Length: 362
Ligand SMILES: NC(=O)c1ccc[n+]([C@@H]2O[C@H](COP(=O)([O-])OP(=O)(O)OC[C@H]3O[C@@H](n4cnc5c(N)ncnc54)[C@H](O)[C@@H]3O)[C@@H](O)[C@H]2O)c1
Image (tube, rainbow, N blue to C red; front, side, top):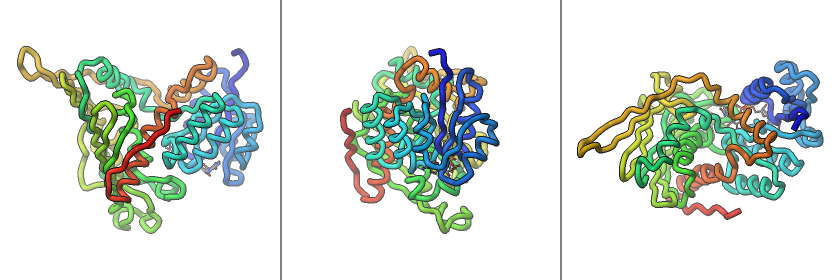
């Protein structure tokens, strides 16, 4: 394809700036329109980001009337569903920010729209582009661990609760699960080759978010700040998961992959900061535990100190997939399993029972 790739952005808040910055660095890409429900916000974004010639809209459907190759959906979680489906139906490829959706049912409808229209729906998990995350997947997929039967992942911030749209049920859908939990789930599930989740037993709570001592918006805090879950995956793999926006602890520890031939321990790059300690990119250490000549051995896998701009890579990969007519780099039908776990955690916590996860075949 010789002509420029034409991009629209829906939702012009914080993360849209990172999308715009990345698109602007890619030769042959033009951001031609921006939509935001708040009057004047898209126009201000266009001016701030110096997107010469781009058109502002309030209604994303007006933006979708334009000839566009791809659309970044950067709205709060709750609007991912409508904006993505409308964009797919309008013939555009979509890069939707994480998490995919708020409910599993919404995610299913988004995947169905992608299949029905033949347009790609890719999800914005930039940690996938970290060379150390790639190494973790390579080790697990190499078979070096033997049969992997147990995985533990997640993480916690000592004090790291966002506010605004992130703590409103009707905008975010969920709290720590949707904001940071989806990252650690993606790290583990992607390394395993995304096995299907079968059941979830979970608890969630919000002791910190609702306490004015810890959150200045405690009166309007409507989501969970902590969750712990026991998840059965297909292939007889058990996944234990915990995530916390706030806690009286420095870290919730490393992630573990236990296999019949070796084990893998992966730590987050914890540096003592109260917002640190979760998987939103970066790896602290990777250690392989195995037996050699009948003795316990530990091999430290070097963690690369790299300059890879993960966010740029995710946006660039989306553009490359459009140009080369490739499938979605991070396909929504895979991330649906991630969303199904979050949905299962919330349902299980509410019903205080283990719940089944039912995902249709597409
Ligand atoms: N990948 C990452 O590193 C990362 C980081 C932060 C946020 N996110 C995700 O990005 C999304 C947006 O987060 P944010 O921090 O930019 O939020 P934000 O509140 O700063 O921005 C969202 C914008 O969308 C607009 N909006 C709301 N509904 C809309 C609709 N129907 N159509 C058009 N515009 C609409 C709002 O007015 C606002 O300007 C969330 O899903 C969040 O989980 C991803």
